[in-house]
Image (cartoon, rainbow, N blue to C red; front, side, top):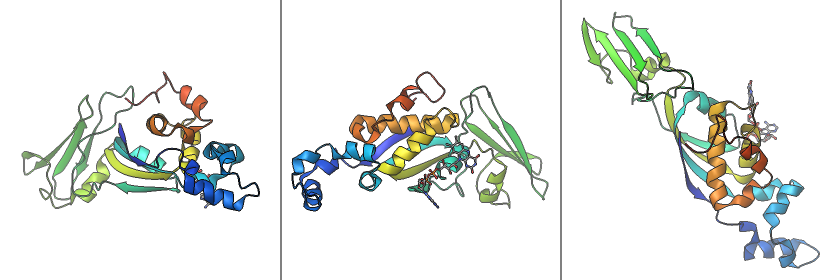
Length: 223
Ligand SMILES: Cc1cc2nc3c(=O)[nH]c(=O)nc-3n(C[C@H](O)[C@H](O)[C@H](O)COP(=O)(O)OP(=O)(O)OC[C@H]3O[C@@H](n4cnc5c(N)ncnc54)[C@H](O)[C@@H]3O)c2cc1C
């Protein structure tokens, strides 16, 4: 798994002058300075609409389709997933304890596509057609890759961009840093936490215990 923070809302943006003026214009006290550190207070108050103005964009690579299925359940995030229709998967995420996987896809014309993983998770695909063994490439058999890939494992690696606002990120982390979450998405949650912690820790207020509980576990820090 490789995760990068591509862009984020800088600093405690609600303490910037224009935001203070805006909020002060709606308050009775008209003392903008009294509400410095407002973002942190929104966490205590559950005032989520303010947290929604802070956003992060992450690039997530070398995670499984299994993880993708889980992460896209978070409806308040935006995703762009690298298409796998025309480019063969080259890597598989191997969970702890699994050394390799293999499979076979038999085509109507008698050709056979076999695949197996190397120890480092590299996926090798071979097609046996008319008695000849070939490295798999688009167009080598009649069935297109977008259908052949149905026979590859759910561990096949994908990459995607994830855009998420502060409120949804907090919801995601609260659910996915928890020990009941599956190990790969817990690891992703740890990576997102650590990247945001470096640039805007105020967004993570109150989630540190959950993050710390993952040290030394399968989730662990960004590998
Ligand atoms: C440990 C664990 C096990 C899980 N197991 C399963 C499982 O077995 N099967 C399964 O299907 N899913 C499972 N899930 C997924 C889970 O049910 C949620 O779909 C997922 O965590 C997304 O959470 P969310 O809805 O809070 O996030 P988001 O979709 O990002 O929504 C954020 C928040 O917005 C609000 N919201 C969003 N949409 C609506 C809406 N339509 N109506 C009302 N409020 C809304 C809710 O308050 C929600 O919490 C599991 C999750 C975890 C963490």
